[in-house]
Amino acid sequence: MPPSVRWSSVDHDFPRCCRFGYTADGCLDNDPEVHRVLTEKVFPVQADVTTVADWTAAASAPDRG
Image 1 (spheres, rainbow, N blue to C red):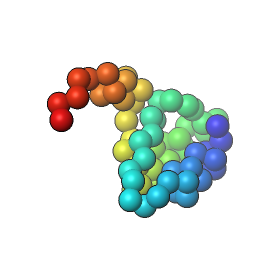
Image 2 (image 1 turned 135 degrees about the vertical axis):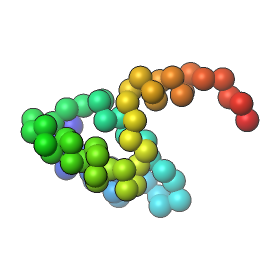
Image 3 (image 1 turned 30 degrees about the vertical axis):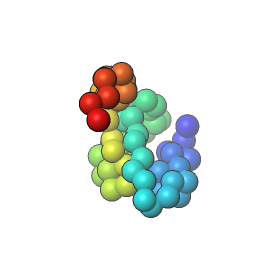
Image 4 (image 1 turned 45 degrees about the vertical axis):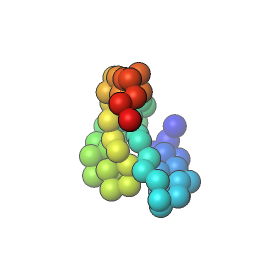
């Protein structure tokens, strides 16, 4: 998925009352610098940036609520 499509999803497709999660290692960009800037500087403003492994572990953890 191109960076512009992912950015559009993070920025516009979710209500402001919600927090979006993004897996930084879930896809790659042709330009490693674009990927770095998006995942380290842009996306964290509106999304929780994590890895696939951390997201999977959190999703499969027992609900403690």
